Length: 334
Ligand SMILES: NC(=O)c1ccc[n+]([C@@H]2O[C@H](COP(=O)([O-])OP(=O)(O)OC[C@H]3O[C@@H](n4cnc5c(N)ncnc54)[C@H](OP(=O)(O)O)[C@@H]3O)[C@@H](O)[C@H]2O)c1
Image 1 (tube, rainbow, N blue to C red):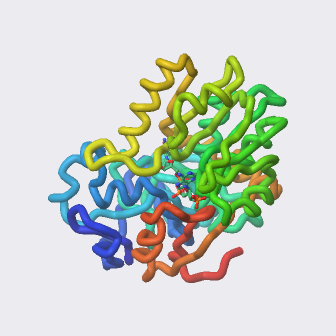
Image 2 (spheres, rainbow, N blue to C red):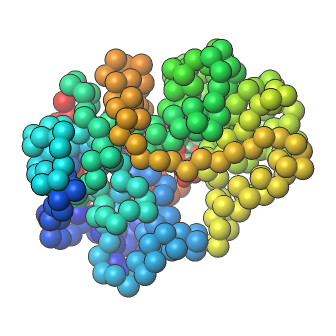
């Protein structure tokens, strides 16, 4: 089969589409013929081995020969392991592979997955939107529901609202009952974010800052100072930091996140982080929102498999609006 691979730590320019063996299906696994896949920042952290701490996630990856790339996928079940029940050959599914799992990558003609890593793709849902919603949607949902816990009627701010996680968080906050959803992004994305349901949108590039008060701040970029958060959070408010723009060679986004933890403790702010769990029932919930149109995925661009390295060159710049998708099958979307 064809798959996007890298040999040792490399930049996007060092990725290649190569012929590799089709995965063999273990008793507890399912083989999926991939229609579409989508890209996430964790992918480039892994193939670059940057920041250095990411090398601990897959020790020895630089010396283990060709490595697959990608987590998110949507496709058709091609083979079911002997020990797996409840899924049939021919069913359409979508999901995401945990970054830490032993695995091939999802940007491949076939991927072998654990049944907990996918849900059924509801009829009528575009596989591109489903693949693109998987990791980003789980992250937004779990940050809001589990780490932020907005009460119905709560006031939410999404800081870094234009990217994969942020643009879904704006919508999921509303779906989980928020009465007010404000957002921070740059000028070029204000209309897009407002169109997804945000109330007030603030342009960070000209120094606009939200006024608050907010019960939950969902933050994908970790650029706000603790003093700013303290000013805009309600007394019982919580900031949930999902990721960070920038960071050094050793810890990468971990650096700003650790600094925030210290700054928040000093400023007496409740600060949490989130590590996304791949959960089939949460994926199913995303699928049902996609089916009803309650959740919309903005697709900035769809790349054919042969151009997957170019998708990562775009992603690494950190300015994607919504999501980038890889069309693996070459078939038109449903
Ligand atoms: N904790 C977890 O388990 C987990 C899971 C998934 C993702 N993450 C992390 O979460 C972060 C976001 O992921 P993603 O998939 O949403 O990334 P993404 O799609 O690459 O985010 C790109 C967006 O970030 C915005 N942005 C960049 N700098 C900004 C700034 N200073 N202020 C406000 N917005 C800014 C850009 O908008 P503008 O053009 O408007 O600047 C762009 O639209 C990443 O660090 C990722 O690694 C963590």
